[in-house]
Image 1 (cartoon, helix red, strand yellow):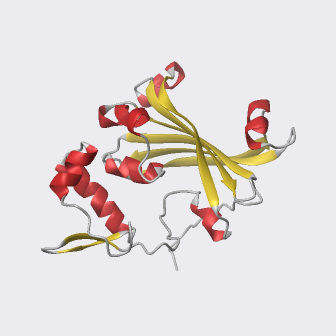
Image 2 (cartoon, rainbow, N blue to C red):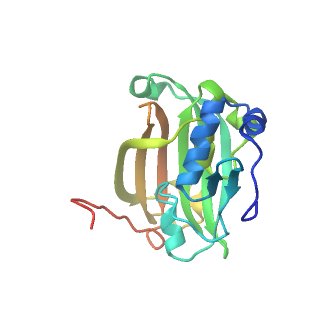
Length: 212
């Protein structure tokens, strides 16, 4: 949608995405927070994204934009899965699994993500309807899941045999490994993701104390 495009009304959008008006308003509020849209009384929501890269504050993937690299995400898997090993941790063993591999325009694979979301409510339809704008963060926001907190562990380790093949790297190549669990503003579990990151393309930033 071009800069200045007027979005359809809330009623039409809610019907199109099969969500409640409350969920839709949360998604619009998140898009407004990221400067994708602006809202004018009596007019509606207008696209303000001009095609330039924006800081979405949606996780480590933004680090790629800082390198100036154009990155393409390939979806390797989007399906419902059963994970009995996670039952005690998340209170359910039913999840939606999304595996994505990112590559630069020269074909170099720079990351591999394996995400798990709860297979509950409207998210059960995700394997059938797919992602919105190829973005998991925007998709989850549209379904009422907006990240508010969680935890992340970061380390480094050699790629295993399967990941070596998926990423096209020699055996023993060391990648950064990030494990992140995210909960939404209602304290609901929304995503668990394992990310393997090429250290040549990613940097990790920790901020502490009072921001200056």
